[in-house]
Amino acid sequence: MQLILFGAPGVGKGTQAKILSAKLIIPHISTGDILRQAVKEQTDLGKKAQETMNRGDLVPDDVMVGIIKERLNKLDCKNGFILDGFPRTKIQAVALDKLLKELNINRIAVINIYADEKELIKRLNSRRACKKCGNIFSLEKIDGLDKCPNCDTENSFYLRDDDKEDVIRKRFKIFKSTTIPVLNYYQERGKVISVNGIGSIEDVNDLILAELWN
Image (cartoon, rainbow, N blue to C red; front, side):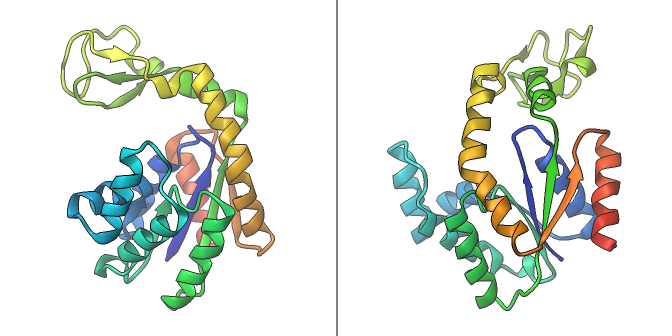
């Protein structure tokens, strides 16, 4: 099974991707993870990506598509995969379609996890990270705690820059201007499964699986 997870910042697509990966026994491919891996392995494309990132620029579409191609050609993707964070632009979506044809992959499901923007901003702004282990928690889960429940470090919780309201609103603006056209691109082709992301992690996952098996 080949899946693309799509959704706004904070909607929970990364969490759902990990659960689906375990249940379906297919790899969860995160754009950030494969970029870091390509750089670590110093592949030709990884070197190009590193040069771009060192300048503070976005990785070009052709380099990103090349890195995705390298990853999808690995043995663990033989029975399927979950793409998380790619494609981010319509140009990348068109290039991905071409790549999938080259790989003889003719069917891919796009899962759109949606939620009210105000609710997502509230959710993101209510997260705190641990300075030591990096785990992220909701304020509700750590209310009254002085220690991180993961690494037991005292007074380690802080609000990440990414979760500050002004930054969150900027991320949503970018999402709407660059990524919404990707959703429209797939909707025109009738490939989109939409699931409400407001609810428990388990309930949202059940909804996704129910749609996939429908």
